[in-house]
Image (cartoon, rainbow, N blue to C red; front, side, top):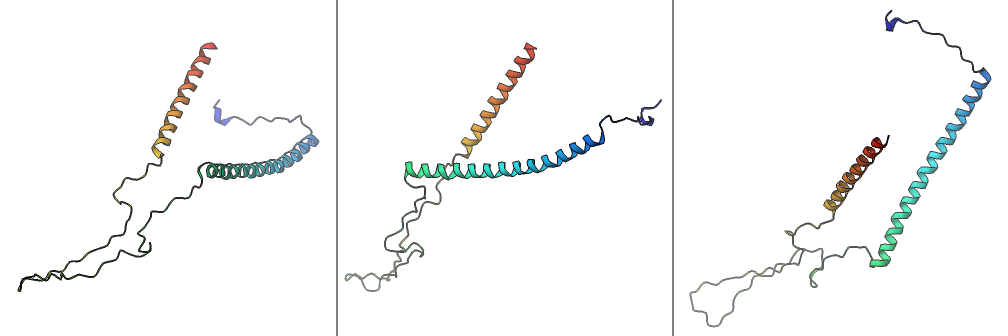
Length: 155
């Protein structure tokens, strides 16, 4: 006898047709309730997340003042959206200049104060967050392993 050529076994179902119909109607009713519950859970989760975010922001503003970043100050003589001004060339007006000496012109450039572009990027804590995640994962895994080992010894 080969296992893949077995004849199907006929099973008789002892459950009456009326009870099967009842179970089917119950299953359909539970499906609607399950979808309603899932939608309600989603809405509740979103409301709680937004409330925590905006509540935390409100508390931060009350404790620290405001969370808007400050803009770097620009030169008081020039508006912030204009490029730096270049002064006109000046000619020296020395009364004791010997005849025949070449005249020189100087160009002065007035620079607008801008933040240093070669400065390091601000440390926003992404490395710290990654470190906390790794340490927490390792500690949790180690604790789980220790508890599983302890339970297997007890059994």
